[in-house]
Image (cartoon, rainbow over all chains, first blue to last red; front, side, top):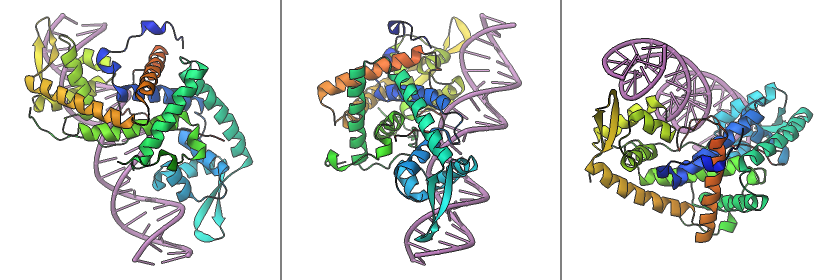
Length: 174
Length: 174
DNA sequence: TATTGTTATACTCTATAACTATA
DNA sequence: TATAGTTATAGAGTATAACAATA
């Protein structure tokens, strides 16, 4: 927990310039911190995303929420199962479409949402602590613009921090 | 591939402030771009990391390289297997310790390293394109400092660009 | 015929724990 | 006894495909 002298920790030289490695390390550290913070929430961080989406928008069915968050619909089922079992959300019938289930947060769910969101902010602050407040603003703004660029590139919404399939072709050539 | 109007892509409001989600999206976009770029390299991005580590340092055995890169030693075995099968590295006996195997790049491996590294730089540039050159410098510098903080926090080194932690992004924004 | 929600299955990747051969 | 490398296994997580009910 001690940041100790930041200078004492040296990054391996061959990774120092490796943007992918840097990103994965930050994400990893972030996930470590945040998953611990929201550990008692069913579904972890994604459960919180679902809860947040259910609370933020007006009526949305499972598939809409799933697509919005970039979650596979079959994964969404279990996620909502867990949240519903803990009575944080309810599946309500959609009067306009009897196939659909609208995800609504319960009062308990809204309370948890507030609590967990607050914890998350703390965890974020912990990870971004090496940066000054101004630098944090600049950093997250840059991050946001890069994300917009990524999404605009027509890539699929991304299901997780790790998803692409690895390239494994064997070859030997100069 | 057209960045199109960055402004036309709006981030879901409940994810806009979600640092974890932003990071996971950027990493995802980055992995999409880079894994395609180094697709024919055995082991993908981590194969490249191993190759780079083998080339950069003087003699290092598998375990040292694995620890340096934050890769599990059992994963390292297959990684080196693949690289060796493609004749990009060799496992050489360590005269000082008959248990150890020193990973050395072949000439072919060095050629691939240069080629793949160049491709990687291009892919990085593509992802960071929304930022000006100065902003990129500031961004990666901030990223580096955050990583140092994460590593100094005593967290396990994380296994790779695509690391196996669970879920994914997180949170919420209301 | 297409779509929502669900279930079951296969596949990928990681972590764990043995086992060997050395030290 | 501890360590380097290897192997096999179990687990978490995702994607895929099939299915029922409804549009």
